[in-house]
Length: 297
Image 1 (tube, helix red, strand yellow):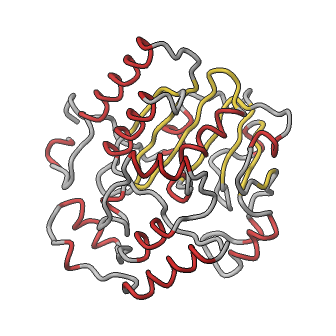
Image 2 (cartoon, helix red, strand yellow):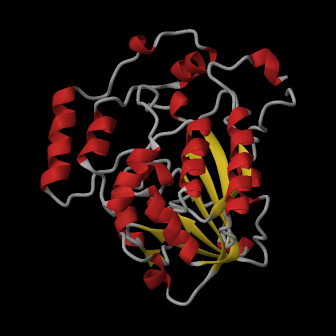
Image 3 (cartoon, one colour):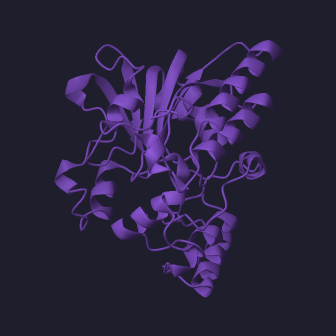
C-alpha cells in the first residue's frame, strides 16, 4: 500500500473497531448485535441495546438463516428514541459499538450525542459503516451536512418521507459479480437492475408521512470521504463534541469502512481547528473508486 493512502479495514474487522478499547476491563454497549455480536459476554462486561426486545427480534428474524433466533443475543435495553440516558439509568460506559447501524438512524447527530451522554470522559464510539459505492445504495447521492442538520432539528425518530423515497427509488441489486465490477469500474451503473419502481417508492414515502409505522431503510449513505467531511462540518459548528480517534478505509472487494470517535471536552477554537485539520488529512487520503489495484500492493 502506498504511504499516501489510509489503512483499509483488515480481514479481522473487530481488530479495527476495538483496537483502542479495553474490552476485558471496560464496560461496553453494543447496538443491534443480533446473532453476531462484536463483543460476547465472556470477553468482558458488555450490554446490548436495540429498538426491539429480544422476543420481537426473534420473531422478526424467524425465517432468516443468517440470524438464527436461538442464537440471538439477549437485549438489555430497548431504545426507540428519546433519551438513551433515561434507558440505561446510572450506568456509564467506556465504549460503544455499532456495526451497520448508523445508516439506519433517521437522526445520526442526535443518536451520536445520545451515546456521548452515557459514555465516561474520553469514551469511544466504534462504527462500521457501509460504503455506498459498493452496496445497493451506489446510485444514491451521499448524505449532505444540511440534511443531517435538518433531521437533527426535527428530532426525527422514524425515517422521513425524503429518506424513504430516496431509499426505495434507488436501491439496486448488487451481487458478488456486480460488487467486483463496481470496485473495478468495468460496468456502467445503468446496467444494474433496481429492486423497486418509483410508484412503490412513492407509496412508502406517503406511508412514512401519514403513519407512525417504522420503515426500515438506509436513512443516510456515505463514502469514507463524504462521512468525514460531514463530521468535519458538525465539529466546526459545535454540534458534535468528538474527535476522530481511528479510521480505516474500505478494503478492495469489500463494502464497509470503520470510524472510531472519542468524546472530547475541549471546545476551544484551537482544539476544534486541530480536529478539523486532522479530518482534512484523513479525507484527502481516502481512495477514489474504482480502485487502482496496483497502488494497493
